[in-house]
Length: 396
Image (cartoon, rainbow, N blue to C red; front, side, top):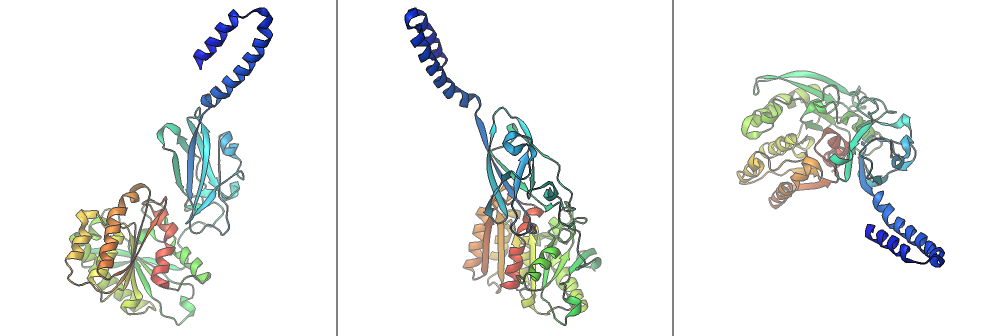
């Protein structure tokens, strides 16, 4: 296009003055065409795809909005860029950002500064900074909670944590117990979900990363809406140092399993109103907690009947779960839910998770396998979809 401009100027110098007016008119037209071609190039934009995952406890019929410190992001107007629901608590919006922009900041809300995205304690997030040169075209953001909702401290439904000594592990283990709201006023006996990584389940103050699953609040909500059968949840705590060996059956996983069977279950069944049979005992966990859940189901069919494993790492420890399965000539009858996301770390789980699901199905096990778009390997991701395995265990 630069050579074209030079060519036009050269021609102009050769034309008579009588034709100059006509030429100028033509030149104006050509200049306008030139500008129409060049200006979009000079002001080209990069398209960014924003994906926002909101928590399960988001109020019904909420809208989600994006705002930021750019004109393209409405210059911090909160009720401007409405995102589009794409299902499962995820929202999406594509925004063209000028190539001249190198950094910007953004926030998420439900349409006002009073309803900003927040952490577990209902404290609004700081502005999220984006360096254009250090990201790809997709920005995925998890919302833990909302500023206008009550903080996610453990509810009055949760008792504990209290200590139980484990001779199998030679140490005390903390236990927290969720009791349905009807517990003290009813003669009912309840099924029990035994869940691993219990420090992360009810209280952000004890959580390894400051984010809890808020299963007590989730259960209360589902029960109140008649979407969930009542149950007791027993959360068995661990820590980041011990969990790897405690949840590996070839290290101390068998000892941990024996502690649950010989210590935790008798304590719960002697002190709480629970149903005392395998059909009312379930297991649940994420990541390595998912692995130990399945191994305990396979190894102790006399105790447990169902399990759920979120972000199942079937590849872990040189495919240990496949070796565990192959060592069993016959498999007991049980039901198992498994899932993972398709983003971040979890995106690597698909191949072996699919293989595991097929292996279980081929052995006659009733299994359910789901994947979740834009879900990664975090407490926030598990909290957002925990209602699905809960429904599987309690309503199925």
